[in-house]
Length: 93
Image: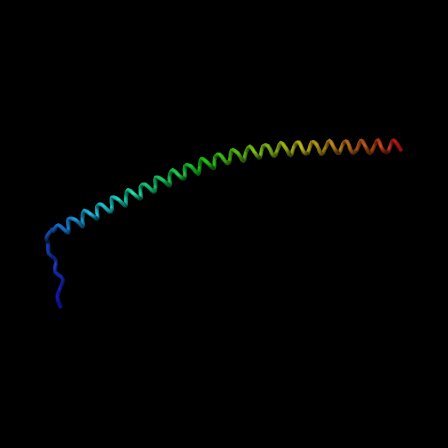
């Protein structure tokens, strides 16, 4: 059986392999950094959109509360009118 042997020589193939490994690591790092930057921008846009939606929601809640107050006022007014009509009908008989 033959044993593996190692030669302590630097050849052109070794230099090319090292250069390709460094280039691949650099490209990988640049791609990774670009993705991180894109995700950060996406998160900022989502937070801005959420803030805008919260503002809209507050405005809608305020408008709904006002509508509820108006409806309650109208119902109270109708109840008073109904009571007056009943009194008028009783007194007219």
